[in-house]
Length: 469
Image 1 (cartoon, one colour):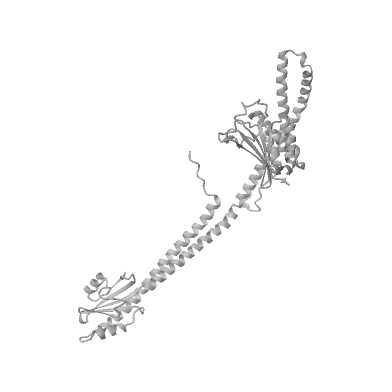
Image 2 (cartoon, helix red, strand yellow):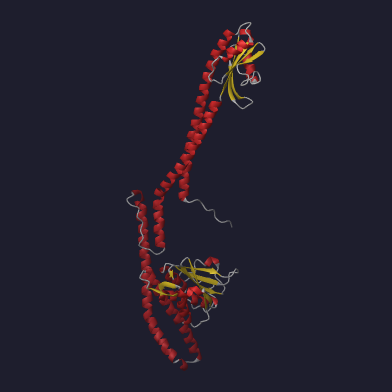
């Protein structure tokens, strides 16, 4: 199955919308400006060149007479004024071609044959044509037929200045469009922060509530458009807080109410245990089962009381400084199974940790109990220091925990798919949840991963941020 496509963030889409909109608008204006300027320049050049060429053609018609030499005609053509200084006059007298500047415009080679035929066949009206010469120079060529001596008059005006102007204009418009695009991005970034501020506030407030701060509320100022959102969200948060507090109070009350009859039952069981030798075999079996279930029930009540204290927020840390390696040795020595090794570098012997001793001992014992119940016992406790944080890992060689269950195994009453069939099954389902709560109270985190590539073995790692030397 293909992984779902990740869409762009809302802020990114908003910023790009501003930028692309600015670019499209600017590009449209730039294209319109370019073609308007281009059309205006070309039209003005056409009208000016046609007017000047018409006047020059009439002068040539008056000056061309029988017996005029080619040099005299060339001198006359050279003295004609065109629209530009680079304009070149060309004259065909009967069969001879004379150019004012043969280097710039060679006749008839530089003339377009179609234009030549049009002018030659015309009686009075002239013709014009734009094209590029062999060297790539754009020209506007205007031609008129002359009645005198079967002559044709042409005037070639270069358009390279207009082309250069249009190229410069295009470059300028492109730079302006790019600048407007960046300006649009900047405006989009500013606007997205303003527009998405309430959304971010909702996210931050919801995150605070999710991590346990039930007093967090949404404040969007005096914006009337957001008042409904804020009031609805805060009303939902109030309802959620009331429900959680009611559930926590209920769990706490139930746990307290269960302690009294549990104490009485435990005392009665102690009496039965004291007279165990007087009971028959079946009664002893029943008594052993009752002892095991009562012990599990007692542990469940204690865990529920501890969890309810977290829910109502009455837990507080009693911080002490102590040697972590020495502390772990004492914790393991107090357990019935003392074959768990502590793996650490020699220099960690003198590392101090600032933490609540009772809670940290509960964390380690719960992780070791979890390994006893479900993995045949822990094989090692590993101690590391990374980025001034202390990492304590409890490692076992059991069946491991499936990857899809590793994120939910610290939930309350979550024992995983292995919980129903591994070990003695005496766990309450709250041990790892209490581990997460104790570690969270210290500002740390707890994770689980598999040790071996085949998915066997588990490594529960507790990270505490207050390691000091």
